[in-house]
Amino acid sequence: MSADGPGAVSADRIGTSGSIYDLGYQRYRGQRLGRAYAFRSLYLHGLAASFGIGRSTRSKVIPIGLFAIALVPALIELGVTALAGEALRPVRLDNYFSLVGTVMVLFGAAVAPELGSRDQRHHVLSLYFSRALERRDYAVARLAALLTAMLAIALIPEFVLYLGTALVRSDPVSYLSNNADQPGLILGSGIVVALQVTGVALAIASLTPRRAYATGGIVAYWFIADGLGSLIASITPPPTAAASQFTSWTHDAVLLSPSLVGDGAVRWFFGTAPEDALARADLAGWVYVLAALVYAAIGIAVVLRRFHRIAA
Image (cartoon, rainbow, N blue to C red; front, side, top):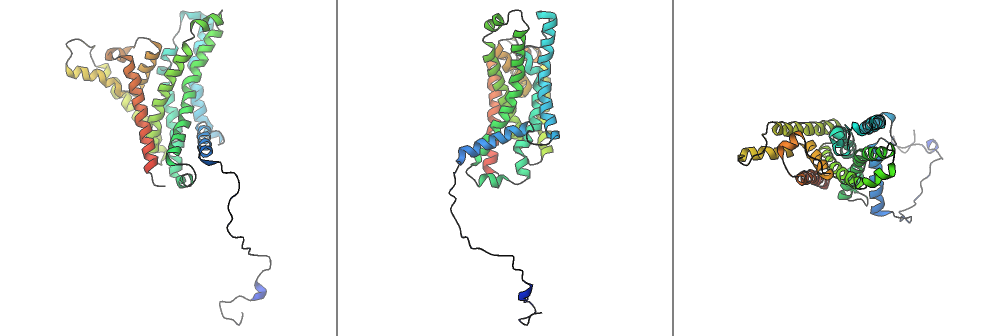
C-alpha cells in the first residue's frame, strides 16, 4: 500500500493505456434538416409501422391480414361477374363499406395504439419534443400516417372492384366511359369514411399508454355505439307527419352509430337509396356526411389537445 494513505493507489498500478483529451465544445457545422424533415420522417415511420414494415413478421400479420380480408369481397364479386355476368351483384361500390367497415375498425384498433400509445409507454416523447419537431407536428404526423393507411384499406379494394369490373366486360373502354364519375365518388366517400375511423381510433388510443386498453377501448366504443344506434333505429317507426318529438329524436339517434353514419355517407355519394335502419330514420344523405366529419373533427381535436398537454 502506498505511503500516501489508505485511500491512495500506487503509481505502478495505474495503467498507461488510458488518456484524457480536452476537446472542448464545438459547434455542429453539418446540414440542419429542420422541422419539415423531422415531420416527414415521423410520418413515414408511422406509415411503415402501420403495416409492420421494418418490424418482426408477427407484427405484419394482423395489419396485412386485415388488408387482405378487405380485398376479399372485391375478388369474390369479380369472380361472380366473370362467371354469371351482371345478373348477380351482391357486392357494389355503394355498399362496400357496409361489408368491410368492421375490418377498417379492427385495423384501426390494431394500428392506432402503435402510433398513439407506444411512445407514451416507452417515455420517448421528450426526445421528439426536444428537437425541431413541435407537439402539434407530432400529432398531425401520427394522424396523417394512420389516415394514409386507412385510405389504403378504404380505396384500394374499391378501385380493384371498379377496374376489375371493367376488365371482365366485353367492352372495357365503354364501361369506363359510362362510369367515369365512379373514381371521384370512390375517392370522396373513402376519404370521409377513413377520416371518421382515423379520428375516433387515434383519439381513443392517445388517451392511454397501455396498448391493450387502447385496442379494447376502440373496439368497445365502436361496437357499443353501433349496437345502441342500431337498436334505437330498429324500433323506430317510419316517420309520419304527426310524429311526436320523441319519435323525431329516435330518428336522429341513428347518428349514434358510427357504422350507420359511414354507410349513409357512402350511399349519399353514390346516390343510392338507404336500406333498413337508414330508411327508417329517413334523414337527408348530407346529414350522414356532416356527422362523419363531426366524428373526425372531434377525434382530431382530442388528439391535438392530448399531445399538446401531455407531460413529456
